[in-house]
Length: 229
Image (cartoon, rainbow, N blue to C red):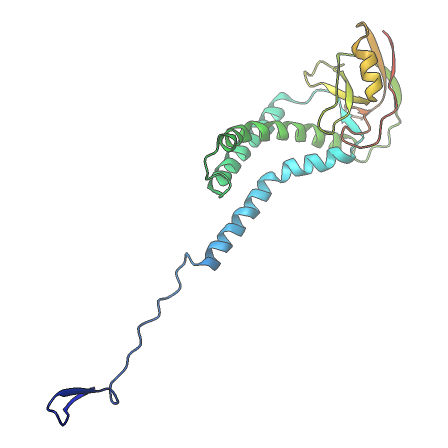
């Protein structure tokens, strides 16, 4: 850049030889849109991994037709429940960071607080299913008909069937046998002291499994064979 006098004696600036330096372009920040998107995708993968036990349990319950009724080791059950509790706490932390829960709604807060308990229950159920897989995954033992006292009957809600509850081994974890809705009304109004006939088989280690035909399948179950004990 140079300064020269024009014919009127005024100074003018000559830009023809000016060294023009463009403003420096800032480096892309680590918090750019692409980086933020990658971080969000990673969080989704972690949340999917944390939710996978519940998804496996739900998918398995849609197709499973059996249920283990013998007691499980209490230390094993509590270990699984504790693992589910930790899983639920970590999941709640990730959910709290998501945009859905940042609004601070009351329902969202309740969901975050309930998630550890919900996942502990899911891991408890997963422990029973895993024990059933291990004991009877490759079993060819035949089924036999056995009678057990009816503990309760319950109406099906939210896609579940109406069921008969039994607890022959005193596990405190009722096993549920699906029944038609019409039979539920019959048993609900009947007197106690009745037994239901189930198909069961026994593994070499003493575990007992019964047929339940699944609790979430859409087809109507056959009526259960119920008689006085």
